[in-house]
Image 1 (spheres, one colour):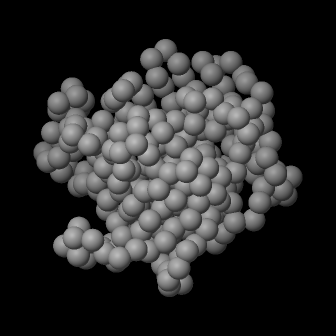
Image 2 (tube, one colour):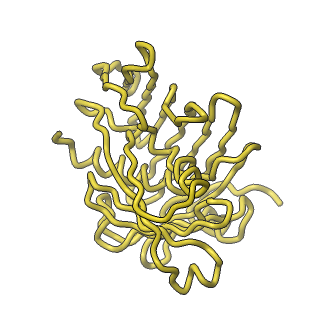
Image 3 (tube, rainbow, N blue to C red):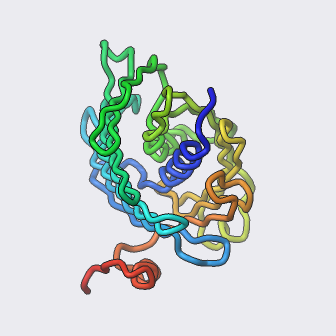
Length: 259
């Protein structure tokens, strides 16, 4: 279905960021990432935390966008541990004077996904989508891909997902696939696995590198395939007090943790 250009851009990048979330583990895990453009300029930082349970997996996510426009996003979400079926989530964003709040929940005995949406406190039209087996929120992609590696990823694996902030007119379901490719120099140097990721809805092909714990340590969006900027984007996992993240925040006038 037809979507606004702004919405397409936002949800696409949001999904890509979701790739870099930490992999599912028995204990809570927290990761921090820096995104640079093709010229090495820092354009975003973000962090996320997964809190797994016996029946549910909770995610806490925070994103700071610096270019081309300043924007913050936060998410608290819950999904079933075994199927990754979304249970509920809350999305908050702030850009200039615009504040967006989105609440999603699974209702009617798991048959319908309900979206409630507010802009600057004003209620928007509720949206409903029929829930399909195997569907998950885009931020849970790292959990899904870990499950594939545990089974032994030897060929193409398809998936379908919902964008957490896709709330203009409908709640579309998107499809994608992953496929392991031959290791390049970076994969050999870091002893990681290189994976091709195809997002069919946006006709975008990207590459990710995953370590032995199935945690994504690098993500590349080739020049021209980023629907928001048309520029190359490189996502790298960093330490919470890593020098690269500190330098990025300092240049942008953001607070940095004390040593």
